[in-house]
Image (cartoon, rainbow, N blue to C red; front, side):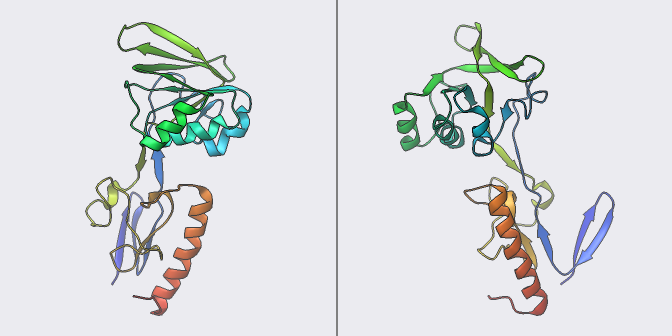
Length: 220
């Protein structure tokens, strides 16, 4: 059955469609965040931890990703300060336990991040407001890792019935969605690890599966 993909530059017809629209990290939307992206502001500890060896860094967030990545950073950073807008973490109990037991991990509670501070070249700190006292404060850090959520880019596919409640596309191990001839790969999928390496592997699988689909060789 033919599929029609409508875009802002025309319509395309095909027998098979591979969705690889990815996901985006939610941004805080505070001054300095965009200016210092790649200059101390990061959304991936695994990618950038090496740049902050023996430095003080901050993690903004309190969920599983924030604490997991914070623990990863603590392996090489001098200290990791978790800045969270609530008075307790949302991360899984076992992650919280590891974080609280780690001497390098510090916590700032009830903190509303207001600005990523830089010296014109790189990050030097984070300004935040104590939500209980209203006091403005600043913590000096060389890097800021932001984990306030990640969003799949699937708005265009919400009516196809191939996503979960959060908008991630559901596939099997062959990258097949529930729609015949529609495949998905990479960060847009519902999965645990979102990295370039996993996306590349899934691309190979999807390519093979599309070939099989065209040849009528797909396994049921």
